[in-house]
Length: 232
Image 1 (cartoon, rainbow, N blue to C red):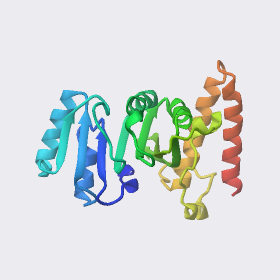
Image 2: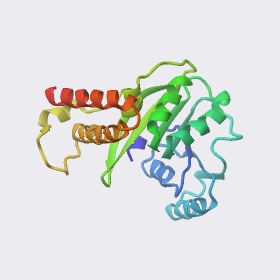
Image 3: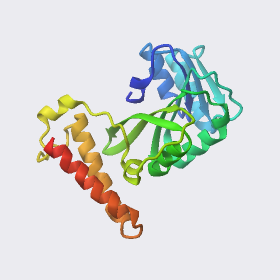
Image 4: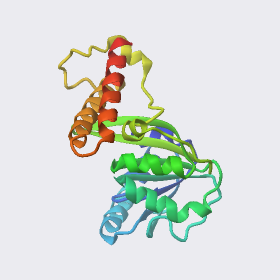
């Protein structure tokens, strides 16, 4: 549901790693688009996805394809390419293979479940502009979702930005009722979720700093970011 907010009506969506086809079905349920190519490189989830599509009554609306990432697919530039629910290194490998076929301003929605640091570094090094991010919490797990445009122009991001994210969307109105001292674990306002996300990243950076020096600076930066949230 969180991924859908970035998809404009009537877009052509390519869902890479569609698994059980929940995203394509949700797009049609909400009348956002019916132009969808759902891809997976594993037959078992594709069979389940086909079953779910049939139950939803969308067999004629969703094109399902067994395919390895974006191989053998050409692009006009109008597609919204969604790659979610896998590691950041795998996402970057999928993008690398298809990079020569992407058009300028091609839109991507990415959700790395791990190795997000490596993904953001790769995106910056390879001309994929991270326009916006959002942090989602589900079942006590945090997920970073990235809205990305391909520009072909390399840019620099810091280690802390690669670890924590950049251009993160937080609803300013949530600051009005935000109490950093609250122990209410049910607070799901954007600011509360982001604060908890940073706290978790701080603990992870602290563990990593025992063996990797650059995480000392990242941990210190996260402490400053949390303090700024509280002061604002």
